[in-house]
Length: 171
Image 1 (tube, one colour):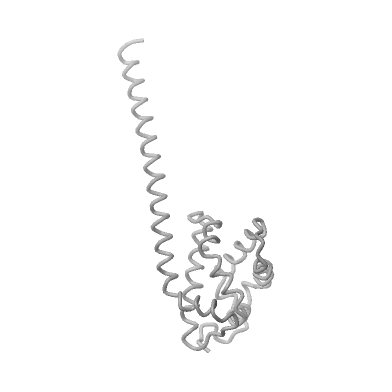
Image 2 (spheres, rainbow, N blue to C red):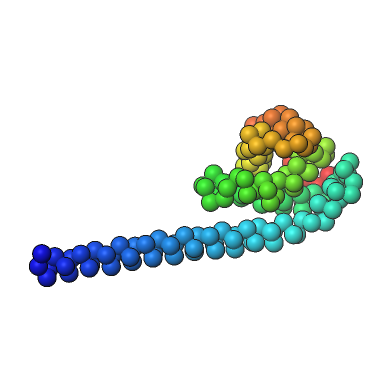
């Protein structure tokens, strides 16, 4: 073994150490970015908290006029979440754990559900996410009666449906 062999071994070890360090930094950065992203989602959902309060206080509540806007806003956030789940940016288990209750209440509300049934083509990504959450809940069953109703309703949604004259209207 000569000096160039020793130098080569030292260089290889230094390179390996550098690669391990970079890999760790990338992992830490990815985790931090995911955490920041989840907090940003929380901020988006905070804007719709008054609607969630209506869902919780009045299970048969029917949105009227401008009350539809924050519902569409919440559903649009879920559409973006679906894209991130498809791209493997977010894990479906985390999405269900943090935001699944919101989906459950949206689907449980008869007025919103009927609007989805009539205008599924406008909400393809939202419906896709509902299906993914329903599949996840079937594979990870809890002792919650609401899961069965949620899964049943989701299975009846059609992404191709278009019978509403104006799915975006506030009436």
